[in-house]
Image (cartoon, rainbow, N blue to C red):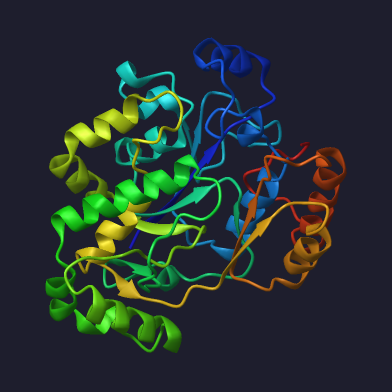
Length: 336
């Protein structure tokens, strides 16, 4: 089975990109268009080193970019496919600065395999992974658990997008029918006992619709055909998401495709070991230790929009990665 990786990357320091973004940005700075959302931590070389070391079986890495290329990147690597937005996005939706728009059209990437793993650029492999960690029996592997979706604190665009995703899932799927058809996928020894127990009680309380999904901010396995099916079922909704220049409260995001695979039973159970950390002065030492000890299979290093110590913290993270990934990969130029 061929498995590809897809990663979205932006260089928020690119002055040409900044000029274009400014042309379309609304005057009010929000969570969706704040410059800090596009900040680059200089860690992509370690993303590629981790891919080569921990997932050497990957067929192709599709590196999705507005147009800028990291200075270290070996553009001639046989496993690398550089994908500019105009290479796969319909022209009427460009330029876009919305990850939601780019995600929901990901199936249009030329040459993309049916089976692929999607990464944000802040998600890293930290241990050796097998193909079967992501796909078995031709289906994506997922750690299922029904967790009621709740709004906590300030309501951000991502929360509203998740609520929109959930509404679409319940429009097309009946939970009771799904679980009767594939009971061993929704209740499985690969999951934690408390996830199984919670899911069972949520079924008793709300048998006909899903109240939410256990969600990892980590690399996710997808079938390209899932996105094609979504476009067939909800073309107006996905077109509306795609036309937004910045993330919008009416959007759906890639979780819709992930949850669609779950609700349709087109997945295989798996326990996911992933860590999510928010970068700050208070957490940086813990994060560096987690990287060095490889505590998880995968980690996500979330940027903090309120961060005040970027220069200090951005120097510490590469040092931690260098300890475990010191050797250059085929994705790096020899002199870079």
